[in-house]
Image (cartoon, rainbow, N blue to C red):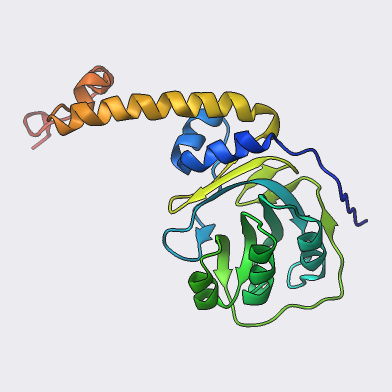
Length: 229
């Protein structure tokens, strides 16, 4: 069964734009206790790539990109295509021309749990793309898939309208319904880290003023004098 939902509920555009100033690491820290950062296999195609945008999700058949072409026509400016290709990296699901189309229509980026090609051209284009792999072989166009359903990308569940934040460290997913809380928490953490950085630059140790010394005291550590000869 293939499902295509043209219309989705998107987060407030000002909230999405505000996430452009939030590193993926900070978003991951404050989003929640479960995993919201995609696994390390999802990498930026070029150094310096970054984006924040609302998800248009795609479930594609491995090795086939027909549904991805359709999804591009449904995406709106500021959206990120989040493509679940089941981690298949032996065929490219998209390349330079599809990315050029996305850029021309002001999409924020693409994240695919699968492979892309034309890495050099995409890098020169400076359009943010994150992928699990790169492969020269082109895809089929015979199996539909689904658009705007829950998908899994980088071992993280993504729903349509979720906010994605990407940079050199990777990609973090922020659930749409929790976006405003996460944004405020991220701003607070950024302020706290600024203050912490000032102390570190003055020579203070995180180990001491973060209380890690107390944690260390509770661990049984064997030193040279305790070792069995």
